[in-house]
Length: 400
Length: 233
Image (cartoon, rainbow over the protein chains, first blue to last red):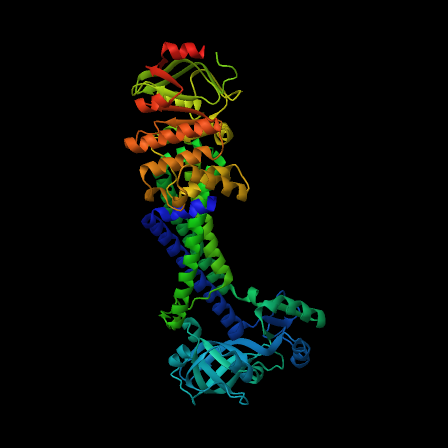
């Protein structure tokens, strides 16, 4: 009977209940869309960071992170082939890719600039698909002196595909070395500061320039990001003389974005919470005032204070359930429409390329939106319920 | 003197504040109501009828005196602790019917039985019996706004009677009804009183209603007329 009364009382003043439900629905939809956008952004940023740049795990020679290297690749990996074999035996591992990072000067004969190069295995680098080629081609498989230039650096060096430039750097023994390289292509990753200094070259070319056979690190890519910790432990159990870093330690930008978005989401949640609390409390309080005589009657015929409180709290629960369900439905529909709508967002600060707006409908987002609607509507009904249950019967019966 | 009365009031007084003025609504009321009696409390407007009824019905507290209902002294008990007494021992019929608008006739009558946690089958039987008694079996699914004034008061009577209370209090039960409907309602109350032996106490201005009462207690300026007081003593 308590539920029946509550639902019927919610429907009693339809216009007022509709406005309250609308507030809850808008709140829930806002939480779903922003929560889904946040989830999608986190997922996309995480996966693009891992699969396009840093891998799930990075394997280094033991002591790499603690000891200060005096020369390039002083703590590089010597026998990467056997290490790779051991790691790739794990069924969770999708692939491994060797990398070297180095710095130096790049010159066109007239002008020199500093560069930061990433030396990669060309075939593996194609699979990572982390860049957009704006001119020329990707790195060829068997050409150690081919390089790709970041778009900003290429512009600065007046270089185009087919041109020859000179790279200069310090070898592992500390002496200077230089090599001529052919510009195979020009690329961008969308971050101007990076594009202005970036060079990509094959491992073989970097080893030639640094005069070494070592590599700096081995990137390990897994099928599923969720397996990172398990794979980390398994590799450490099988191979000695190495140290491993997980992607989470190597992605400060990802964590900054997560913290920023979580802060915004939390603030949005508080705003929605406050609006829903005031709206539902106002609706139920109005209902209490309008039904004062009815409350007096209910108490006169034997309804206890606790049952009366339960009746009004149940009205809050009913509003929360109806609003939550409508909010979830509308939120899911809007998310589907947005995902199909190919809506493009402008580039974020520091980027040169915009991205597609997508909403990820994760169960956690839907549950959070529903719980916020439900819990806030329920909490909002407590004060009106207390007010109703503390009325004097005679005063309530005499209320006009 | 009434032996083993259902209601006993001894020296009951009640004051109200109207701004700075203190108004004495009841002054030294001594009254005993026997089981099965049909008592009318009569008096002009503002004489204290409703206040007296409210105190007997345990929905208001006296400032002085003692109130005993069915052998229990309820004077010192907070009103919110008396909801079981109101649910099981008392029944109320209001001048303005006071039905729950979102419940239909059946559900309005059923409501106090749900509070009593009566099993479903027994609950249904009682509700149907009282719908028959008040002649509203065909209107059981109708909500209060679909019923006439007389029909609403019949639902209110059924709601008051369905818990089989010992005492039913009715505040001006016919005041909002036309004379024909009022007569029907009076007939119904009198019949129920005779058949079930339930005690009825009602306040009224209505001479016709007073004629139906076994005893008329007259009240003026918060004091009982001498005969009523004498009878109580």
